Image 1 (cartoon, rainbow, N blue to C red):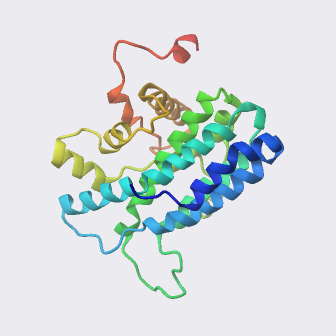
Image 2: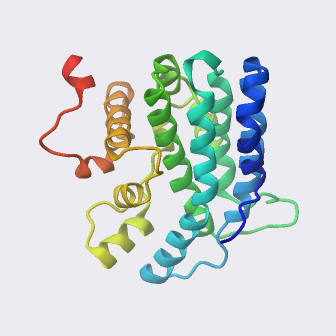
Length: 253
């Protein structure tokens, strides 16, 4: 097996020990982890993407599969630091998701690079959408309801979008309809939702299907309440829900 030796993995290995020694370090440890995670993400930029649906789809899915190991580090890390007793500062997570706007063009664009293909950065839209969905899932799983609320109600500075509107954006700007992923899964497996299929078939072992579907649905309802235009979060995983079982949360609500 390939040895897992990324920086994020080393952060994860020492996390329990660090938190046991000093629980107040949760914020600084999370900040350090996310900085290295953000830096490592640049290693997954697509290059010279083909134009046919099938070829591009295969490369896109292979790319997402190759980043899965690092994604699982993120999930494992958050499962620990989002526990209520650590009182994680939501601003650390908000700043991380605000960085998503950087991954729409090359890291050194304007310095050594003058042009680029937008398709080479399509995977990052999927990655950040997936990571946000897991973040809500994990915070709720850990009964950290204040963190869930803050993530869904806070403003996000997302570069061009924010500057154009002169105000902060909401979490649902992280949602995007990825035409290439949708076309690929529709053509290959006749799937109605490419993103939903990708999420459900690539679930982290520590997260149950029902947990991520619930988080997806919660994001949808909150975005419906918040959004004043067509831009919303759509719950693509809902198709995979057990149709005979409603979520207790919504029944109690």
